[in-house]
Amino acid sequence: MGVATRCLLLELLDVSVSDLLTSGTQGGRPQQGHSMWLVQHCARDILEALAFLHREGYVHADLKPRNILWSADDECFKLIDFGLSFKEGNQDVKYIQTDGYRAPEAELQNSLAQAGVEVEGDSGCTSAVDMWGLGIILLEMFSGMKLKETVRSQKWKENSASIVDHLFASNSVVCPAIPVYHLRDLIKSMLLNNPKQRCSAETALLSPLFSIPFAPHIEDLVLLPTPVLRLLNLIDDSHLHNEEEYEEILEDMKEECQKYGSVVSLLIPKENPGKGQVFVEYANSSDSKEAQRLLTGRTFDGKLVVATFYPLSAYKRDMKSYSDGLTSSRSMSPSSRSSPPAAQINGVLQWLSESPDLYPIERPWCCLKAAIHKSHATNVKNLEQICQEVRNPPNSVPSW
Ligand SMILES: *[C@@H]1O[C@H](CO)[C@@H](O)[C@H](O)[C@H]1NC(C)=O
Image (cartoon, rainbow, N blue to C red; front, side, top):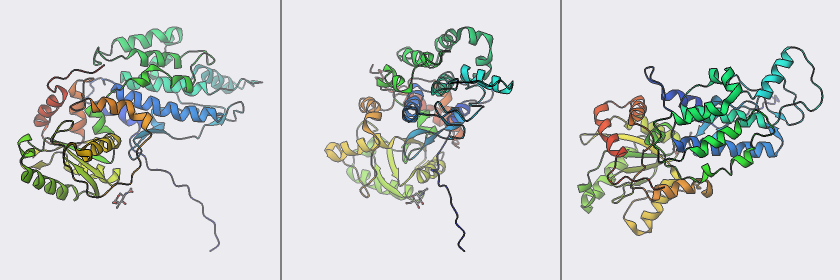
């Protein structure tokens, strides 16, 4: 009685960038880096967080893959762990950043502190240390390689730019049509040895990289949960044209999907985009995650279900276009969820709206196989076939 208790409630977040980086490593095969969509998404979200933080005069001082987490309900990456953060110009933390992600000036400061050398004046680290850390993270995401040893090498210290060039030139899985050089140049400007020359978060956000509408790879849609589930391989086109059959399928699907969580709405487009796919919006991502886990690998009417997530924002747009009269769909109850900031996703939406489906053009599907395998699918052979179809849709011409 009368004892005051305080507690901190923190948002429950999902997979970390560190989890994502290790998810592609299977049976010792070298990993192949993430899709441009994923790298761009992460870069933008974290740069926005840093721009805010730096504007307020704070330095995060511990950027690393473990400290960047995916928020399934907000569909963005979030920066966590402010344990080493400090106010710029007033650095009260001696040792900052983590091995492998530490800026050269922080490295120097750490070793001076270790040697017991007192440093006077404004020799503290600045927000530029965060830019360095993010630069390394993005390079790891793109290359799929751990760079801890690389950044320790003499070669890196002498000419890091040529190593970055090499990593970009040797990433053979990236389709030649994809303009990756904007990412390369951005990373290089984050990894300049002189902190005064390094680009700021504000400037980085102006990079042309962020105006390219990349599409998510199907693997991204398996790895990053959202409240919307997309079921593939369930419905034959022939069923879509018989109104009675269509209604029956809707009812069946609704009943089945409601077993796993609270369904807000359900959509089965009769035309592209997404023809014959089942989109299920759950009340929240814990419901959709449970549904994805339980539905993947199950058979429905003799067919093996493939369940991926789908961006809620893109789903909302699809829903709207269908309810505007394109074709019939059924909403079980109006959703009150507010959509994410439009500007942030507009590019991707634009791209999606022009695509018959999400073109997974960036990566060989063996990575996807590993991802789907990991998500408890049972029959890989069948999946291979589906993925092959998704990867090479007829008339697939990327639109840039
Ligand atoms: C998700 O929604 C379901 C159904 O509305 C609810 O029972 C559950 O508590 C929610 N979970 C979270 C984590 O909000």
